[in-house]
Length: 255
Image: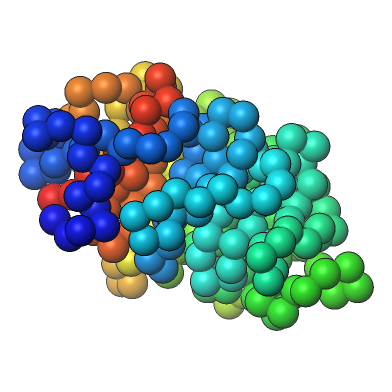
């Protein structure tokens, strides 16, 4: 383990998860949601305060957000009123539209779902260059109904109110290629920068998708990763799995 990770150790006792070792994160409040991408980690706590992990320190970001995301399209978030923001030059800039959840893990495009579970996508030409009011934001509405939505290098994954799982390849740049239903049930799902897919079900059990690659972007099946605590949110980047338990405790897992 490197020096940056070692500061998070609560005790010398590791939680063994097959090949995973999990350590409880200290010096961070009860988190609601966390997202990792391209070597960065951001999170919101149960009081809607956003944070960014800088080195070994959690730094509070300005504003109030219920959901935050980081990836190739930058850092974006939404607040309790579903207003959308992009982090620009150390502050949040209001963007057009209303979404309850956003994800910046796609190929410089943004995806998200609104309060009516309508999925949307914003092209890379609009996300990367967005500096504030006046910049065009041509949101593309996609078919279907999803409550949580995440993208990676090989495609996008979503779950609906029934916890059914779907996959869509949005390339090139927000193209509607149709949803494909997959086996399993998950309440939330996240796609890593390397294409890895992780999610938790309503009982808090953790799963990862096997065989995801450019040839078969939807993968081959699910593998259960045993945990000693039920989870509500997970994200993965650069060999680290970040997990929030249903009680709000945060763990950093490696294998």
